[in-house]
Amino acid sequence: MIFITLGSQKFQFDRLLKAVDALVENGTITEPVFAQTGYSDYQPQHFDFEPFMSREAFAEKTAQADIVITHGGTGAIIGAVKQGKKVIAVPRLKKYGEHVDDHQTQLLEQFTELGLICACDDCEKLADALQEVKATTYNRYESNTQTIIDSIDRFLNGRL
Image 1 (spheres, rainbow, N blue to C red):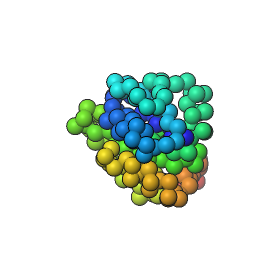
Image 2: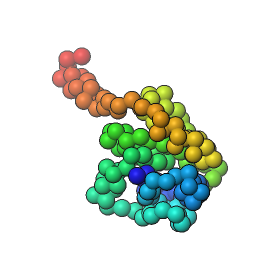
Image 3: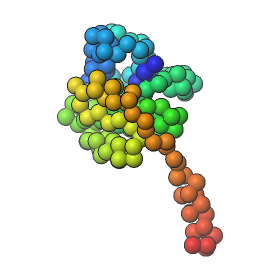
């Protein structure tokens, strides 16, 4: 299954939903698709969706997914890669009214350099991104949270 998550910020991402809808309609995507569409105006015609979901329902859809397609938000990406999901991330862009700036492009460059995700900067290339993500093994996500906590602890206790 493919799970699309577009976050909960007050920005639409109609461009991505339309691209996926077209790929389902023309038979490029054959697996089931479900989307959490957030504040998008576009309502998909060829796959199921909900604007917002409970944490439990969201976690269930993520667990069921083989591939997660998401915007370029750090939380959505980290949440999926932590669970070992293959991720296609498409940046929201200012020129389409999808965000206030283009910072998601830079975030996706970093995640790509780490070998964690497939970044797709153009919705017209989404079919290629799907082929790529299916054929690629990505690096496992390694959290450095404990390292940071230990470093702060050493500093606070004068052990640096």
